[in-house]
Amino acid sequence: MGGVAQVHHLNLLLPHPAKYTTRTRRSSTRTGRARRRGVLCCSLSTDGQPAAAAAVGAPMMTISITGATGFVGRRLVQKLLSEDHKVCVLTRSASKATSIFPASKCPGITIAEQGDWDKCIQGSTAVVNLAGMPISTRWSPEIKKEIKESRINVTSKVVNYINNASVDARPSVFVSATAIGFYGTSEISSFDESSPSGNDYLAEVCREWEARARQVNQENVRLVLLRIGVVLGKDGGALAKMIPLFMMFTGGPLGTGRQWYIRAFSWIHLDDLVDLIYESLKNPAYRGVINGTAPNPVRLSEMCERLGRVIGRPSWLPVPEFALKAVLGEGASVVLEGQKVLPVKAKQLGFSYQYPYVQDALRAIARDL
Image (cartoon, rainbow, N blue to C red):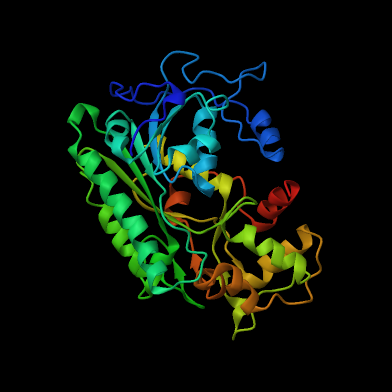
């Protein structure tokens, strides 16, 4: 049964919040320490106690988020709260969301089950749509159906709530995730935001996913479609499943297929992706399709060699393709078949990457292992 988690003591029926204003960015030093301890530290005052989201005047933004309990969503919520925004977690399970975002550590959060999503959305400055079943699994016909429907159904629901909101309560920004799977795979081609869609299963999913997001009323709502690459971070995504394999197989290259070593690996560090989403929320120049990838894709051979180095494994014994498929399922195609996807739009917009090179991204991740 739907309902708003009362433990977070926030009023869902907020007036439409003021648009963001410029404020000095808070230091992330304490947040970084908390991450290394494995604690979700959402917002802290100088004495280490939770800081109220509205400590100084009204919050800059109120953001409703689907997929907030996932790998990317958790880090995004953490960032938004650390910047004194309010967050509404749109979830199917209030108990799961409350366990991830306890009120004692995350005072700027409202948790809403599906029956109350419309109330949260109508009181928000913006909506971020990250929901979707992970693709890193074996793809039975039932799983393939769920992978598609989990994205399309939630996106449709969110778009309907946005479009049905009154003009004075309608969110002004809709950031909807999609994936570089839109382009299909290639051993030789490069893709940017202007490239056509591929013709495989993941491309089909992405086309339908984006089509639903485009149904939002774009006369009143700025739409950003982030086509996200392979996200690197220690707590989720493909890398979290790959690291144990590298530890087991001594950290060598992946796969045994023809020309696997020249295939491109289009990646992005989790922190850069969260920053890209955050910038998309704030900056009106961010509009339409934007590739969520690092500016320097690498060959799989280089990525594997550098991962082996940072986790202290030499790169002479290959990780077999069957082992990768065993943990990633058909989702391994994203890693093994190759995509060179370039973030042309993000670079044109002047987005600044913390980790433009894979070696720096992997070193940062390895420090937290």
